[in-house]
Length: 289
Image 1 (cartoon, rainbow, N blue to C red):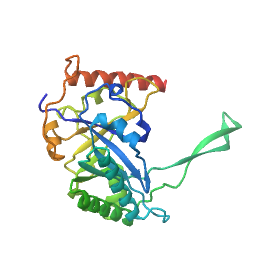
Image 2 (tube, rainbow, N blue to C red; image 1 turned 90 degrees about the horizontal axis):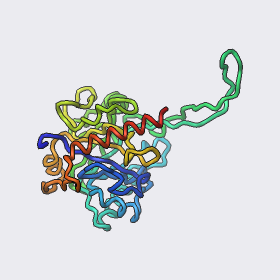
Image 3 (cartoon, rainbow, N blue to C red; image 1 turned 90 degrees about the vertical axis):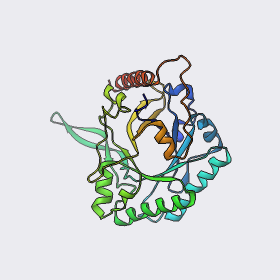
Image 4 (tube, rainbow, N blue to C red; image 1 turned 135 degrees about the vertical axis):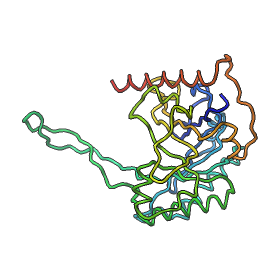
């Protein structure tokens, strides 16, 4: 097992009451969403409730400010304020990520549509203009955010995005700085679930699809469809694997390499991970039927 990738789970305020027991899988280090624009998603209760997951990484969802509501300085200051909130509760953040994405929004509207040759009233979803507008300015803002957060924290700092957003929102606008920063890539091999995802921690079995020109990655968000305890109706979690072993992962975060705590029942952690993911996949498919 020494050559297997480390696992990581990322949280937001939606999982504020999640317990370690619900997670049901040994994951050594967690990542927590701190803010979106100027809104902080942390409070003392949330920080304390997730402390059991050994949260060591934080991320900010950057807003493009195309309407003037989200000045970059205010967004960075908000993130750094959240870092200090964690520190005050005894949670030290050793890695920082800037989340670059578009996030298309939708609204429900009632329309007359033709079904089987007849016109009927139906509620349909229509896409609204994205709340983040891709532009050269937005790419530049993201770089400045990375630089400022790294300067203030002096810790590992990197970019979170998907291959599509990397291509359409950065490369397309002439941005070339991304190769100089650690990459946390969001690339889900399947829509919904496939049991083979359970082997994502095995380098011989799986690797993410990378954006054009990218040859390295730090962390891979392999799925965002996993119920925390494998049961329908429980909070879903985003699951990640790192491009390296647990020892390499901890070294990148500046942490001492300590042996992972074995499960109480003595079961191999990899077997426990695979069993829980398989159960979660079944629960998700039940929801879709």
